[in-house]
Length: 130
Image (cartoon, one colour):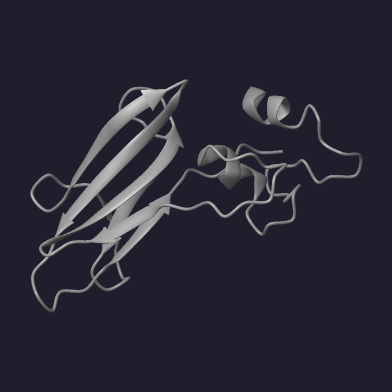
């Protein structure tokens, strides 16, 4: 909550500064912008880096550092969109590349073979009650 209050200290009058609001009108909720280390007062596309290599996919994204072992945002994978799983060392790996001022840069590596398919998503907890 303190992070959201701090983010909106300079919000223009009338801006929707609730967790579910979209103060900058870019289509991304304030909650998700805070989780992904974006500024909810500046229109932006929250990008992540997804690269395809010969034998793996590499996803790089940023997130606020959460309590040890409990990240605020986590990458999940699904083969057919019917069930999602977080990093499993037997299938894919997740590692923190760096942490600067409380922001982690995270790398996820997913090995695959020719003809394989699947889906990535970034998952986050629900925002606190308003």
